[in-house]
Length: 109
Image (cartoon, rainbow, N blue to C red):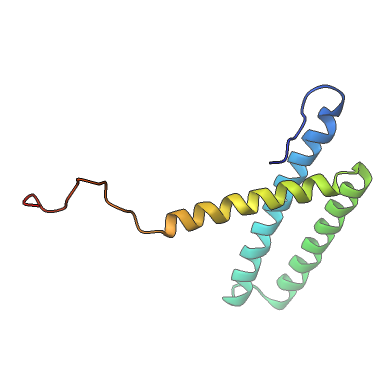
């Protein structure tokens, strides 16, 4: 598991890693919503173009920030671990629940 140091001299890098990772996750969510709206026909061609330009600009700024701060790798590591965690949670939720041993839905069993 990735350790983010938010104490001492490395606190700034650790906090930047967390903040940039969260911003990337929010941008991903905005992109998914934009695609959903675009595919449903809720946006005009002009709105789609403007939204695409803004999202691309935002991603470029985030990439530049990661490079400038030297946190590319730590953000990628944290994102990877968060993706694995979410996948595990989704898979766990999708699994049917097993009844507790000794418990039955029927009183006579």
